[in-house]
Image (cartoon, rainbow over all chains, first blue to last red; front, side):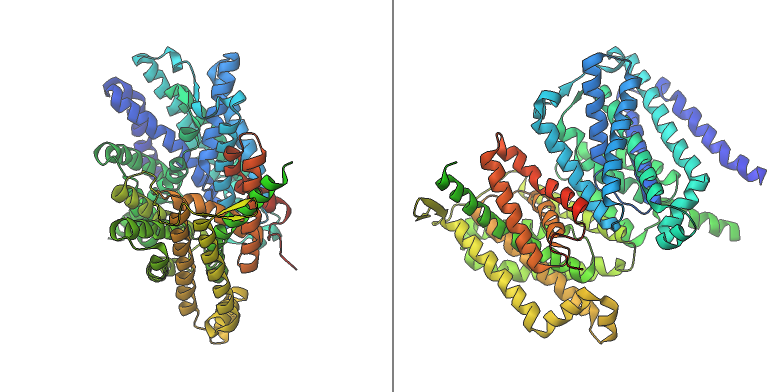
Length: 313
Length: 290
C-alpha cells in the first residue's frame, strides 16, 4: 500500500518540480501558453466538480466574466492589492452561482443547463448596457500585472500556478472527503440520498458555489494579465464550451482528467488557431461528439483500461 | 402615447412572434417526445436560411419554391441526426446528450464559417421592398408572407398531431413513454419521425429568416436560445404553449425596442430575463395545469 502511494506521489512531485522551474527554460511565448493552460486547468477542474453532483453548466463563461469585471472595476476604483479583487471576483461569481443554483434546484439537470447558458448571455447584456459601471462594449483597461515586462510574466505565471494548484488540490481533497460520497450519492440516486439524510439541495448549491468561485478568481487573474477586458472576451461562449470539452476529453469524474484535457486542448487550440484561423473550433466539435459516442470515460478511462490489462498480464 | 405607433409596435411584435413560433414548435415537439435538449435545432434554421439564400442568388429560385425543398432536406437531416447520433446515447445521462448536440452545433457552425465566411448576408426579392398599408399601419409584404408560412405550418402540425395515427403515437410517447411502448407504439420510429418533423420546422423557419432579415453562421445559436426561452415559458412539450410563448416574446421585444431608451440593446436580453423569471415562478411553464 505504501509502495503504491509512493509510486503515485513521485510523478506528481516531478511534475510540480517541472512546473516550478518552467520559467527558467521557456521562451516568453511558451510561458504565455503555459499561463493560458493554467487558466484553463482552473476552468475545467471547476466545471468537473459541478459534474460530480450531476449538474451541468453551459455558461461557465458567466462566472469567468463576473470575476474578470469585478477585478477590473474594483482595482481601477481603489487600487487595492490584486489578491483582494481576485478573491472578491470569486465571491461575486459564487453569488451568481448561488442565485442560479437556488432557482434551478428542484428541476431536472437540463433546466440548469439552459438557465446557465441564458445567465451568461444575460450578464453579458447587462455589462454592455450599463456603461456607467463597466464602460459598456468598449471594455475596461487595467494597469499591467506587476508593472508589465518579462519578469512580470514570470510572477504572473507563479500566481496562476498557485491558483491552479489550489483548485486542483480542492478538487482532490473534495474527492477524498465525505462530501464526495454525498455528491455521488446525489448523482446516483437523489431520492435515496435524501432518505439517507443527505440534503441534495445543500450539496448541489455547495458544489456550484465552489465551482464558480475558482472560475471567478481566474477570470480576475485573466483581466489583470491581459490588462484589458471587454464583454465579448469575458463572456465568450468558447470559455463555456472549453469548460465542458476539456474534462470530457480527459475523463469526467476524475481529478487528473480535466488537467490533462486542459493541457492538450489549450495547446491544440492555439496551434489550430494559428494554422487554420477560420472555423478551427470544428475540431472541438468533432472531439466532443467522438468522445461522447466512443470514449465517454475520456483519456483517463483509456489509461485505466491499459493499467488494468497490464495488471492482469 | 401615440396610438398609431403603439399599434405598429404591436403588429411588428406579432409578426416576429410568428417566426419564433415556427422555431419553438419544432423544438418543443422534439423535447416532448424524446426529452432531449436539442441544440442542433438552431442549426436547422441556419442550413435552411443559407439554402434559400443560395438558391435565390445563384438560380433565382423564389423562397416559396425552396420551402418544400428545405422541409424535405431538413426532415432527412433531423432523422439522420436522431438515428446516428442521438439514438446511440438515448439511455445515457441527459448531460451526455446535451454535450453531444452542443458538439454537433460546433461542427455545423464552423463548417458554415469555413464555407460561407462570417459575413452577414441578405437577399432582395422583388417583393421585399413592398409594404401594405392597413390604415396608418405598414406591413412589410415579405414579413407578412413569412408570418403566413409560420401560421400555416403550425396549424398543419397541430392537425397532424390531432388527426393522424402518427400524431396519436407522438402524443402517447410525449405523455408516457413506457406506457406507449407497452401499447405497441414503435417508439424508435416515433423518435425518428418527430426529430425529422421538428427539424423540418426549423428549416422552414430558416427560409423565413432568409426572406425577412439576414443570415450568418451563428444565427442558429441566436434563435435557439430564444426558442428555449419560449419553450420554458409555454411548458416543455406543449405546442399551444409554444405558440403563445412566441407571441409573448415577440411582443415584449418589440415593446422594449420602441419604448425603452437604448431599447434594441435591451431587447436582446428580454428572452433571457423571461426564461429566468419563469424558471423561478412557474418552472413547469406558464400554462401548466396540474
